[in-house]
Image 1 (tube, helix red, strand yellow):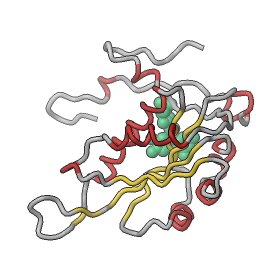
Image 2 (image 1 turned 90 degrees about the vertical axis):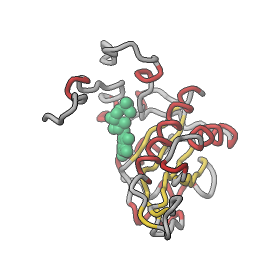
Image 3 (image 1 turned 180 degrees about the horizontal axis):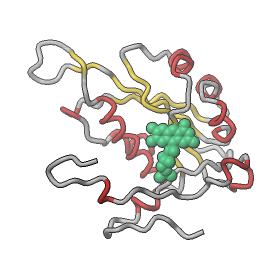
Length: 196
Ligand SMILES: Cc1cc2nc3c(=O)[nH]c(=O)nc-3n(C[C@H](O)[C@H](O)[C@H](O)COP(=O)(O)O)c2cc1C
């Protein structure tokens, strides 16, 4: 299969080399490895440096794994079972920014937490690991499993693992187990005014 990831401009290859495989080996990673990935996310930028993100993690083969894993939708559970760590990415919905008289809604809580996620993904890749974001989960179940208060949003669940053989995936996922493409930049970048 030809690689669809041909950058139109000379970007650092890290941007096109990162992708989200589903085939994982089921091997453990160390707490040190997980914390190295989380450490990268800690340095993400955020509005007023508020750092709204929180990382609630579970390593495989620990008591914390099942309650979070069971909150994932079935389609994800078929392959996330071979992950090495799960991270619930949550963010504080409110903040008291400098100069504000009282706490109020932080419009950027998910935007900032998205930056933290991508830092995680690049650090994982740098360590020869895979990080794959998931929206396919039951929010109420994840909230109950983690004890997350209502004033925190669940932005995503991240599975971190070691890339494995795609032959072990269900057929439907085997066909999709390759880096995907992007629409051209000309359809995304607009000079001065929006155009559809
Ligand atoms: C917020 C978010 C939620 C996602 N949810 C899922 C998911 O539930 N299951 C899944 O298999 N992939 C999920 N993905 C992976 C995307 O499908 C993938 O990132 C996208 O197709 C781009 O591919 P790439 O990451 O390989 O470049 C999610 C990605 C993001 C960023």
